[in-house]
Length: 317
Image (cartoon, rainbow, N blue to C red; front, side, top):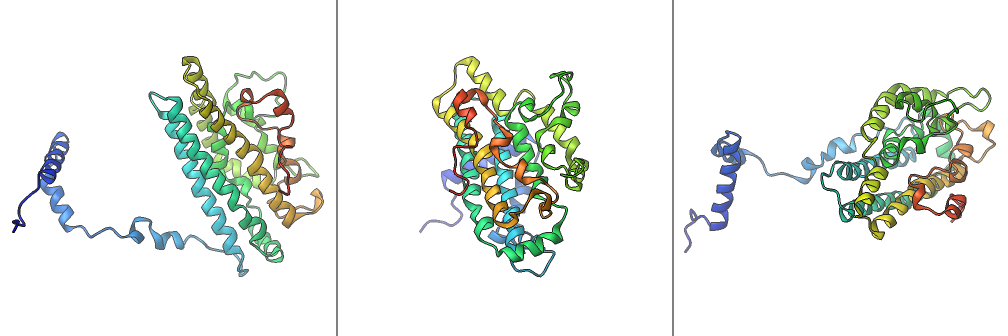
């Protein structure tokens, strides 16, 4: 019979490696092993903080479908977090290769594909009358205020690709704090009658403008497009990488926004002047990709493809 105190060579080697690891930091491995003996086994519910997670859905009304609405949006933000996590890995890689870049972009596109397909929860998964009632209790909040989506846009491309109506006298090399005034999404949060900023936009700017400007500066030379250009200089560009970047460009700037339009059409199909339940955002003029012409990587698309941007996918498909 094997003595229970016998230590296999594999375990002994692990203990040696741990001892060396902690010795470098001036730490005593014995203390850590004692702590391991005293610690409880990890459980699933503790690891994912299940009780805390389930306590974060707090509807503002008694309409049952509001729980669907808030849970869906929280899930979306978690996927946005994963997308930003992957892009940060690309930007921070010290020896970036096309293979690594493409593999991480494939993950990003997988996350966005899940989000795109899950939008049926919003389009078909709630009763219209319930939505129109509970949504009024949530004003002036709006999905427009998702800072993580704005961050995804900023870390994806050169800041100039996100600007509109920049006056001719403005230096294209001006500071991001100056150029931020012309970022495209502000045009979608103006009051139709007065052209003043909606409360939705005012709240968002007060909370996040400085953070977004800092991010734009941080990613000036390492956004996804700049990372691609650096690989292009070294000749390390593959068709697989180009394909993943094109998929990303289309899913974010065309398909994701068309899904939002389908939801808005279902629940808020009114004249623009009557729209109130989107926090004051002018979705009928703001969301359509053919109106925005937002493209992260224009050089990866032909002239004819850019001309047809946002028109190639059926809104009701």
